[in-house]
Length: 214
Image (cartoon, rainbow, N blue to C red):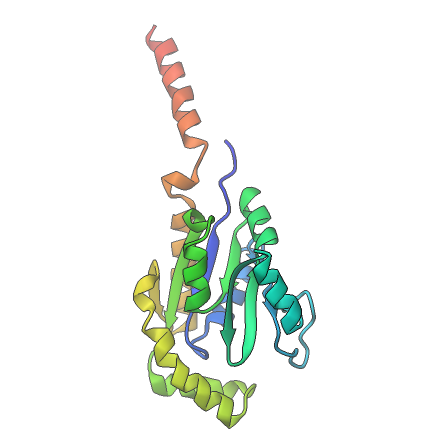
């Protein structure tokens, strides 16, 4: 049978709800899943590697890439541009490799309206509470108090778009949430439209049946 086309697995959530941890867990579960490496105009954080964590580019370069149609999706978040280069994603889909996106609702919406929309599987991650969301942001120690407050103010705007996703999960226990994510992806891979060889297999069975009946 021919291999299926790859899925575009989108994970979205407000900052601190755990989508990055869940994304890494999915990659550990199935190493064939490829992370979509985003381009960004923000400066790298300590330990981040260009081409591995992000493609770090200038504002001018990013705007040119958007103009030339080289971005599958893009958005401006907290004063910086983020986007997903189109070409490597399209190539992965064609060879049957799933691509995992850790993006916000704006990016998810753009991909859902793109030429690759039939391959999209979108999942929104909710925190168990706003109090827990704030605690997680503080605990990870990556941002200043001002940035944390900005992220908290933005969190409800992110959450308000939950109905635009295929699945919504409450991340109250990361292990249980990982299990649910794996179940969703396994089932979506087996949906009939994503198994292009099934029709040919049924034809083969029909030929065998007719030979036997004859």
